[in-house]
Length: 326
Image (cartoon, rainbow, N blue to C red; front, side):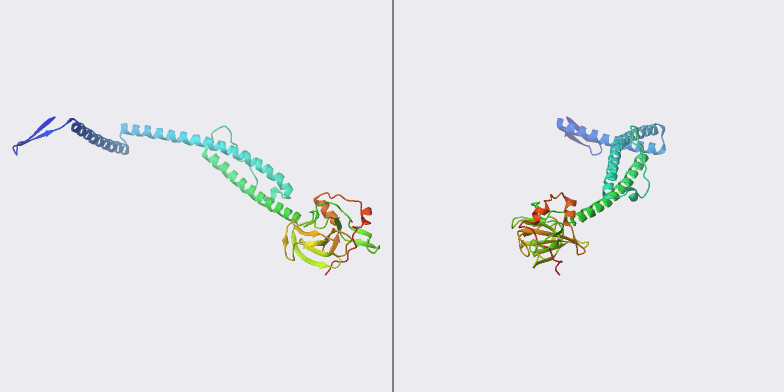
C-alpha cells in the first residue's frame, strides 16, 4: 500500500509505503488505543453515575452488589454448615471425655465437682438445621470452658495418680529374691545355733550363692557395712521412717548414699555373718520397730509359703536376729 502525504504550505509531498505486516501492526495498535480510551471512559462514567445515583447505572450497581452479597452469603453458609458438623463431633467427643474423666477420677480419689468452677450447661444442640454465627460462637465458648475444666481435672488426677504410684514404688512389695522360696518366717522360733527360743525379725529366702538380691522398693542406701550377725548388710531408707534390711550377702553392689530404684540388683546371696547356709535375711522396720515383711510382700504379689515347722529345723535355718546395729 502506497500513501502520498502532501503539505500545501511547504509545497512538499511524501510517499509512505506500508506492507501487509505493517498495516496489520498499525491496525492492532489503533484498536488497542481505542479499547483503552473506551475502558477509561466507561470506568469514569460508571463511577460518576454510581456516586451521583444515575438511574440506569444505579440499578446495574445494585444488581452487581446483590449478586456479590448472595455469593458471599452462600459461601459463608456452606462454611458454617461444615463448622457446625465439626462442632457436633467435638461435642460428642467432649462428652465421652467427660464420662471417662469421671470414671478415672474415682480411681484417683478426686471429686470432679470440686474442680468445676461454675455449673455446667449443655451448650447449643447441633442439629441438622443451619446455625448462626452467634450460636456457633456460644457453643465454642461452652466447649472452651468445658475443656478448661477437663484440663484442670486431668491435671489434679495426674498429680494424685503420680503420688499414688510414687508411694507404691516406695513401699517394699517387690520380692527381694526371684526364687520365691520362703524359709523361716517372721516370729518366734527355736534358734538353730543355740537351741533357745528367739524372735526371728525377718524372712529368710534360701538361694544359691550369687543369686541376685533385688531392692524391694525405691529409696536411698543408708547403711552398707559388715556386721558380726548380719554379715555383709545393706539398709535402704524408703522415707516415712520405713527401712528395709538385706543381710548375709556374699557381695554388695551399692554403697551408702546411692539412690536405687525398685527391683534394682543391690547385692548377691551369700552366707556371711551368723548364718548356717546361703540365704537372704530380709527385714522391714518402721520407726525402728521390726515388722512382718510378709504383709508388705503379699500386698504386691502372692508369695508362696513353705511349711515353716519343717524348714525351721533344716540346715539352712537362720539364727535369731540381734537388735539393729548402731
